Length: 234
Image 1 (cartoon, rainbow, N blue to C red):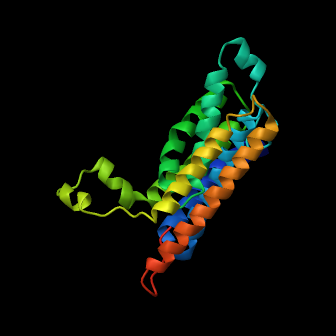
Image 2: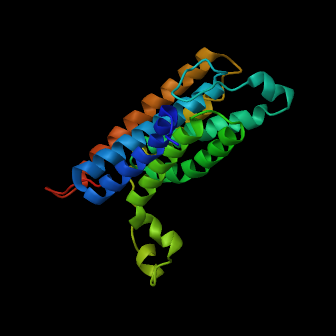
């Protein structure tokens, strides 16, 4: 039996990410950096938009849908659950869009995608399970990219003292405080929709400006401390 065109397209949503992941990770170099950067940007934007969509009562549009049924949540006393999912997606999006905490975002995104896949599969949504599975493949690709950092979770090192002796990479105290304050303001501002959409957007914008400023400050400090001729790892 010849598969229909929609069915072929659905399977391509999974096969293409698998091929892209395998080729990019195998090739390395600029192709791998392009893959990692594009995957983090796409997945981060999806999560960030999805979280804002839910937290703003579907007023701030994102790349993920459909809109959350707030009337249904209220009927079943699930408003806090809806807010939790929105904040989790917002936080994951922010982490993925930072090179510093992108690995943490990718780790958190795996159970998020699995939950979404089970939801849309059980609801018999046409095509969506394939699309979300493709996004899961990209997320797993990001974890494979950072395997050298993750392997110690699965395989404890023979000499743990080597890891304990490694100094933490931090920046100036002012930049660190500004970064965390900006991130907290963005996440906290996302919960202010019950006051007004304008207050929510204004608070989050102020936090974003602080976050971007601190990110630039940390990046300049990192560049200044790097030896001449070295290459930045993704």
